[in-house]
Amino acid sequence: MDHSMMDHSGHAGHPMPDMPPMDDMCSMNMIFTWDWKNTCVVFNWWHIKTYYGFIFTLFAIVLLGMGYEFVRAWFSCWEKAYFARLATPTNQTSQSLRNFRLSRGVLYGFQVWYSFMLMLVFMTYNGWLMIAVAVGAGIGNYLWGTTTESGSVRAMSCH
Image (cartoon, rainbow, N blue to C red):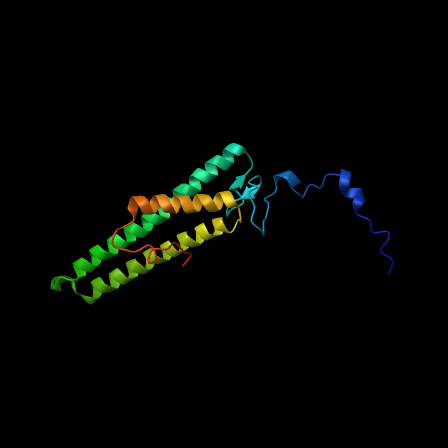
């Protein structure tokens, strides 16, 4: 079968209405990069197009990293307080234990979801965004980290 007549190079000068402009598309990197232009962070609507958008994104990701550490610290405090309440004989009912386990499961699921979302930010393979996640986690750990847990126990991971 002769395919020599199937040259599609003639489309170069013609607009294609179904296709967005190439300079407006999200870049998908599979290798480490420092290029921030046209990076989409987790969602299509979080598309970095300008320098100010890039700076805003870095700030937002630092806050998200800090927020994750806050959630971890809050969850730990909540769990300890609940265990203390369950330790009294009057509060040791099967219903209160079921409520605690349900609440703990929901909160743990939220914590895992949050960590996976940060992992997806890391998976942009953008060095600037990776640094922002780590800086946020470090600041959050400084602000809300406890002195009773070692760093190896509190290591930030996706799960």
